Image (tube, rainbow, N blue to C red; front, side):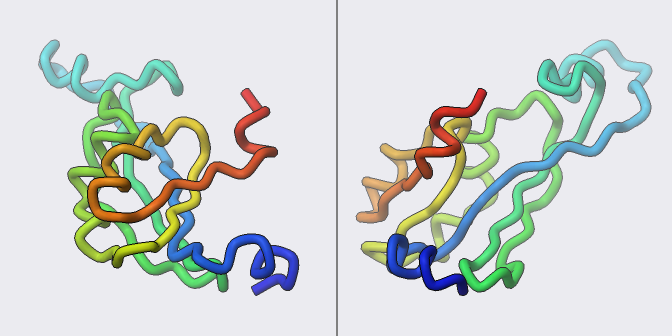
Length: 118
């Protein structure tokens, strides 16, 4: 892992991010609504990936409907079950999971350059 990252983020257990995959528009209006992503402005499936600070992929969630929030996806993925007390999860500002992590004695870290970006 890069020396600067390690010196500033020793407790980081996993870096998480989500990605969306475009899908064909479902026929059912209910399914259209469930899979519609306002961020991508199309119907999608959304998944989350966890990467160790060394760059190794350590977690891949199931895919969920594109309308799910990052927070909901994080909770449903059960990644929290794999964390240990005092672990740090690094994520961008879209992951509003600080309270959930505090309940299991973990922390959320959002790097400054990600907090300032839109």
